[in-house]
Image (cartoon, rainbow, N blue to C red; front, side, top):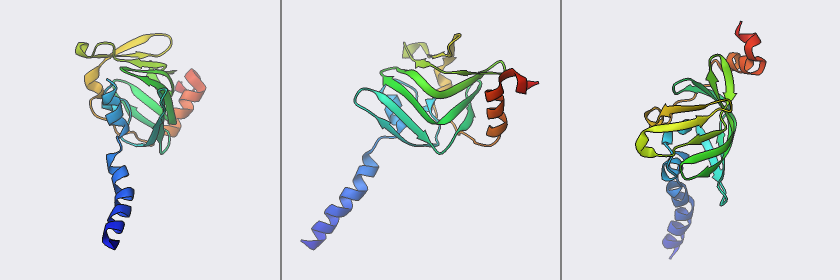
Length: 155
């Protein structure tokens, strides 16, 4: 009986951790590529209404087609095939850092993903997002200063 009790207690502590889905698995189950978020995701919350909060160890940079900056917290509304109202993600376009507002996969068979960066919509190949990228804090401070100051820091 004591052995069964110990097994039950250990099961309660070990199995919930092994059965929880990674954020990358959640993205795939919702029609989005796993590589939209970096490997360095520490944790996430997903509410019943679709509000997604993703927590990283700290702000970091990675590259898909262009450089992308992730804040330490990224939020959005997750629906099938889209992240709407994204906050905490910016993308470099021609020396400017523009906030990514929405990410949408309308038709997975097209092989394209749409990034709404406010002033434009950018279509990228889904193949860029197959694997979660490594996100590096190195060099972040210099680039973050450029982001804060805009074109003045680019000179």
